[in-house]
Image (cartoon, rainbow, N blue to C red; front, side):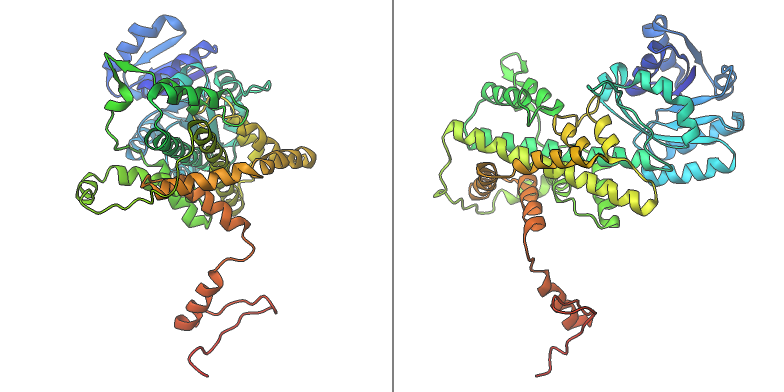
Amino acid sequence: MELGVIGLGTMGANLARNAARNGAKVILYNRTPEKTDLFMKSYGKEGSFVPCKSFEEFTKAFESRKAILMMVDAGEAVDKVVEGLVPFLRENDILIDGGNSHYSDTERRAAALREKKIQFIGMGISGGEEGALNGPSMMPGGDADAYAYLGPLLTGMAASDGIGGKCVTYIGPGGSGHFVKMVHNGIEYALMQLIAECYDLLKNLGGFDNEGLSEIFVAWNESDELHSYLAEITAKIFTKKEKDNYVIDLIADAAGQKGTGKWTTQAALEYGVAVPTINAAVDARILSGSLAERAEAKSFPVMVDDTEPIPRHMKFRSSIRSGMDLSSICAYGQGFALIEKASIENGWKLNLSEIARIWRGGCIIRSSLLSHLQDAYSLDSGIAKAANRVLLDRFRGDKQKEWRQVVELGISWNVPVPALSASLTYFDALTRGRLPQNLIQAQRDFFGSHSYERIDKKGSFHTEWNTQ
């Protein structure tokens, strides 16, 4: 098997090494030749690598059907690489975009290349630099024939799913692979924000120090409910020191983002799917970076409700754990609801159970919850019912009460909990027998004659509200 890799940044370089370890002849190109030279100097003896300095040399190095993985920045950079490669490609050659491209761009590129009889794969890749080298989760969508050709290599490169399989599967046609990766990142935003809010509450209301916080997240990661990659790395973050200072306490509180979270919220609006936890996480990052507004707002009066007692240490950490558990279920649920709606509207026929399975290893949002979601979305109704029963049981009794108390504490004590409260509101809206939007429908009909439906008879109705 031959694989070309264009773009030898951290991810591209590690994927090239991963492919070579799995028996591929890897043909290399980077826009700046110095990076290719450095790669060969550092890793050239790890496998069969062919360094090249031009697209022409690069494409001539293939002895068989060309399969080229592009690891360049999303947007214009991908279009430029595609444009530069096309003159050197032949029918049924394969281009793979492994970056975080917007799924609509992937759809556009696939359609344009189809006219030239060149196959295109838009492949989401999660796992960071370690995953890229040792086994990521990969979400390829596009030409099914191209995936069939690439499948054996990608299967070898992917992470284990922990149940005998690998964390890669054919997602579906068009831009579906990049859509699923986009939603993966939206869920990632939500989970990270939930963890950050739990940290804030534990530190500033519970009084836990960094060593205590680390111990809490170690315990979470060892539990059946909250075992996850993010819990694992968070526990390590709290113990990292630089001389006598904890690094976490030296980091500025303005979070960055690369756009996939925002794309998820935009897609949710377009498809009409509620993803409030993901939206809250995106808003929280935007607010954290609004430094001028935050500086000005420091002069605003803040009145806390100090009549709301803060529970004792062990009770408090138990309540936070319940809030994190139930909010996480909501975050994943919102993401899968968005994937399902997009699948239906685009005719992608995505397998939600398979998507949950390939997220069980390698990727950033891997967690024990995904095994239950895999079963819940399975076609086997018996397993699905059992998994749903497990998840529903987690919302019963004291856990849900503790979740509500955590949100209430944050609000009372001026600790922002946008993702925790959004998750709870999402749950309450879904489970409420009757919502107040009947009033909104009446208002819309009053000022715009938009009409409404009734609960006592079928049809569309309008009322002359100003007449007696």
